[in-house]
Image (cartoon, rainbow, N blue to C red; front, side, top):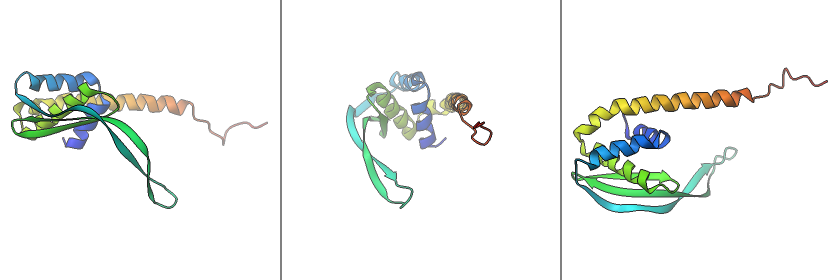
Length: 141
């Protein structure tokens, strides 16, 4: 599983998954905190569709953290104010970067969480489609 996909699952999935995976590492390894969880602002870049030009829509508050495990650096970055999850993401990222043996058994956990996210999104999409109006069949009399 690639880093981007893994991070998306951890961010969009249940918060307990990221916390439990990071606790598994925290209990077994020495973690050096390079950068405590802190807040920052990130510019949001958007492409305007008509002229295909880029512009900055505004700023988003993020929480970021950096840790080191066994010489490997991990970064956690999440939208909003969530220092615990940013730290957990950094620990998990560092664990994968260090190639720790615990990460091999996480694939099934992450895949199960991905499946839950997919089911949840499909259910939400079905609810949204129930509100869709079909103007072709709408009676205007």
